[in-house]
Length: 126
Image (cartoon, rainbow, N blue to C red):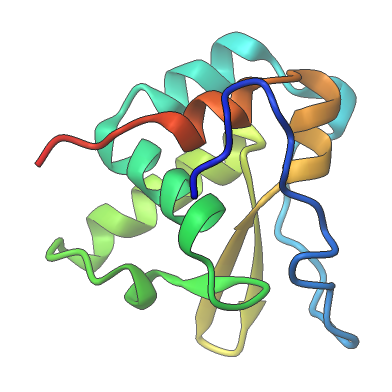
């Protein structure tokens, strides 16, 4: 059942942070998150789909881009995941040759209450 808009049902307790994680790649601090930057990143339908799926369909703490099953060139996907990280929406970690992402739920809920509820309630086009 999708969450109602305005609620913040996602917490780090859903998938606890596993021990021994690599350090996150560079990202903006919570106080540096800007609404216009976050909204600009989410304005792309593919990036919005990435965040939507991470919020509602995650199967573990974080996911590699292959988990999404997008039929796009790797360079294109790399660009989109980098845009989400640089906007402060996702956190990425390097696991060997693979980068995995998860949504910065606590940080985004602190800065922009209700935003993730809107993303979760969004219905992608068929």
